[in-house]
Length: 170
Image (cartoon, rainbow, N blue to C red; front, top):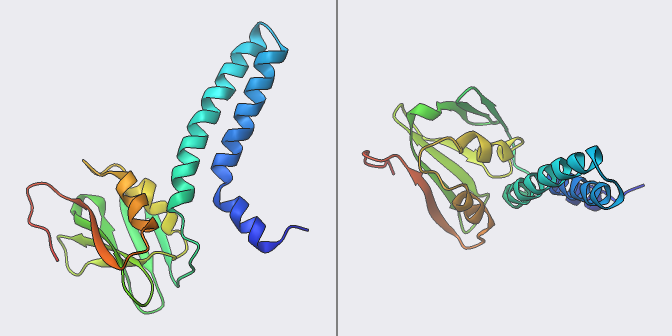
């Protein structure tokens, strides 16, 4: 009934679309009713604004590329299970986060940490969109820099976060 391309685009922007619907409902309630419904209208408008803003950020971060592997996030731990590599990293152990877009091949996140080899996560791995929210608690992390890194099409490495007081691993 819906073309797969259209369904994928709607899915990518789902939070922003739900927020826009909440804002439309809030505006209708505000204009159509007085009293208690007006309070619901204000709540719907505010929730809609929050969903639109966070939904736009999330949609811009999501990759349309598909890469092998699965990313998991659980209580401060990020795991990646791929067909050839994998591993895990604790948020407390992270020293640097970089996004690498090579001239050929898939782009990937490189999560350097104090224990062993960096964790390499392909940009299009299933669940990689969880990284934005999972890494947000890191002190001084600019999630906007993560979104801009993903959107760049120029082959290069962009360091989006480095732990203060530590020499970054390369």
